[in-house]
Image (cartoon, rainbow, N blue to C red; front, side):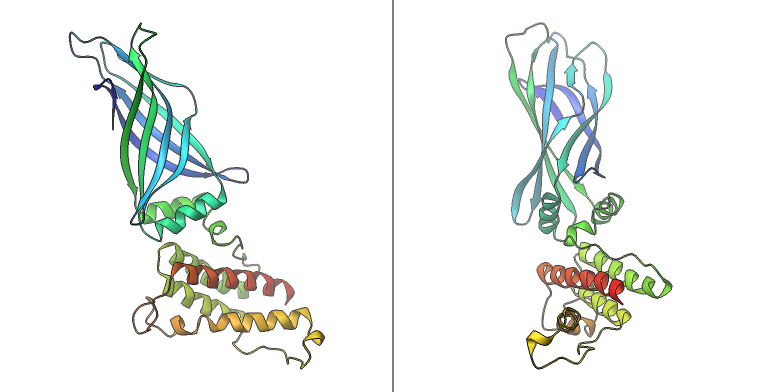
Length: 282
């Protein structure tokens, strides 16, 4: 990305990394940039620029959406000299869970395509009056696997689903349940929604839960205990996993139904919540 002041290039900005980190109650989105200032061609005057913000816009098939405005961690001033100068600068913004959830919905299991827009002011060195707006744009793509690795490293992957966390295995018998739910989560983030729902079915199987309530239900609803009601709810939820479980695994092969992100999210949310509850009460 070229940084220009009055149509004069004064620096090159190269993106080193876009990182997602866990913060307190939110997530930090950090942009690392390598900035190289180029000397002015003779007989041009020296120019300067100050970068105040970097806008991050998500680009997708459905159009562009503004995600966040990154601010410099420390003041970023670029000034031309007679030799080339380099520096590494850092920009950061806080992302709430709902923002990250909206981002993932728009990404829809694909690569993460972003447009960066730089904003600031600049002018001629030693001229404090003639300030002009400075801007620039750049697009970057994070491969799906790279972004998912960042979601996992930041502890964001499970949070995005609900917010119902996948239960951690506390015993040998529970390990298979956790593995199936983590497999379903991976399929969800990869956009493989049929496999996500199919893996949820396998998690129900590991839990020993069937499509028929384990307890004998009473005729009078007022006489049903809370556990009996949960049993009925789980049995009904398991029905949603039947077709993809018997499909060819990709969600759009032998089945007449192509599973959507909303359907997969619903099934995974219910399955994760059911597993967490069932493992505690049994």
